[in-house]
Image 1 (cartoon, rainbow, N blue to C red):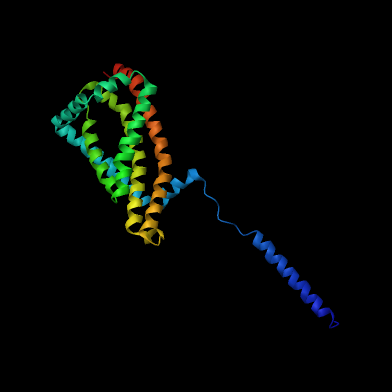
Image 2 (cartoon, helix red, strand yellow):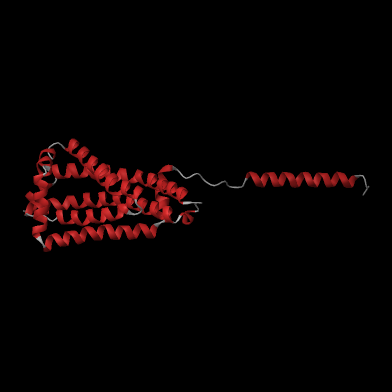
Length: 240
């Protein structure tokens, strides 16, 4: 082979290698962008142990409250009397005949009083405070749910589904409050440089979990309003 052809062959081979490398680089998969609606589910999957523990605690405390209400009826009577004294009972009896307004009222109470004031805001000030406040609310609500009449037990059938849906929404917020406290106190667990950065990443987790929580609260409010208006009476006629 003539010596003059050697550089030409080397250049051709190098050019072919460059093309091969370029072709391979174009086939390298870039990290897929996770859609916004899937991010909350990813948070749940990555923290499934904490999520399951919070589920057991939330439903367990509510059941403990229900058992306390059954064993000590005077506690339930005191809760019901308190609702009558502050006008809540009368308001509910009036709103139940207007399901759209009733659903909107339920949603407002669940979003602002329970989600925001009971879980989220306390956790923004003191780590894990929202979990403690919610635990007290769960026991107290379990006591209140104990029916005082046969009609009340019938109403509990559709209302049990309402409570399960709404409680799941609160559990998502409780998970966010837990992660906020964890990242705030232990920022290295999330790869943050300091507590300020960990706090901000915890806020991001809460912000993402708010999306499915709000959807569940809307579903729960609509179901509660319309089930109490249209299902309880037919069920009472069938079962009593």
